[in-house]
Length: 163
Image 1: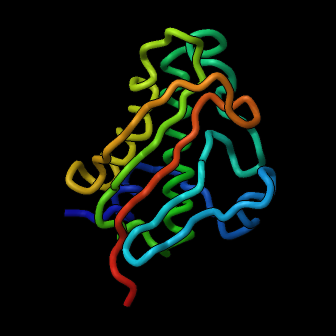
Image 2: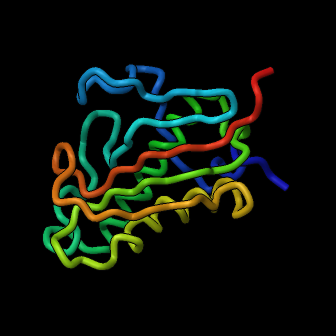
């Protein structure tokens, strides 16, 4: 059985490096992550490249399709994997995904935010396997997110004890 790091490589995933330049420069004074014992909390992550290029900005169901929102959520998941590496050193140190709070920019009455959030959930299951990668999740419709993002993820996970 392969490890999460090996699966990410086998899948050909391009996981961003958050060590250089440091995270958070565009969004003000914030902490990229906080570790409490074996719990790791990540700050909100969005679908954008390290250079600031947005992936599928706008309102799901108005400016972009559910499928484009799904892809943006998947990119956000890649960013989360990069932040996990930054915080822990390796994806192999993830014991279990705990909670994903997913925000989807959408109009009132939109009833498919869970289909957008599946983009991040499916990625985590691909990398970590269902036993570790499946998380408790809420998908919340929002009228606006920073920088016109269509998706944002706030993630909590259990990690291996420090040596």
